[in-house]
Length: 224
Image (tube, rainbow, N blue to C red):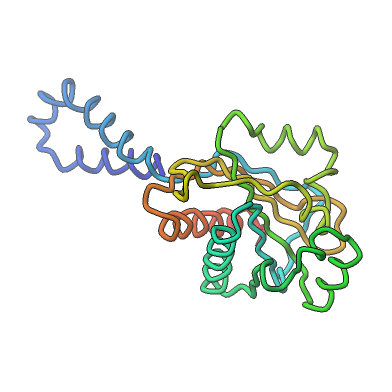
């Protein structure tokens, strides 16, 4: 995002007459750059990604979207929106809510049976963190966990305590979001990412922006 804004600054300067540019660039270019950078810093952006070296991309099949959010209303809205965006990009996506019961999420065997009955072959989780200090770089996390714990395989991806994303019924305007992608038959996460998410546009617009950006990144890194 910031790269695009800096490019815009350069194009703006390119359209300035040469003589004028020589006289004013010394004074105004730093200011313009600062203004564009500040304006663009309010956009969501991916901070880090990590891909399992042993992962080979394949058609994701039916993708389960699971938002680890404690408030049911917010969780359902986020999962619905994320699944909708994946579908709009040609992926077969379903939400965890409405397809997996609370018991499914707690019992591994029940979860396995339900996932198989739905022909679910991949899973993406989104876990909001309110403070940047609460999340380490994905590379450090993957190394320290040894691909275990909450960063384990498909079924372990459902583990971990859901976190709140709201305060007094209003969504937090700034979040750090952990994103993990898993596929059936693997004992480890296929791909990890952290997103610096700006939700000032609201839950709907903010979610749309960051998920479309996430899908592009996953496609570019040959995860999808």
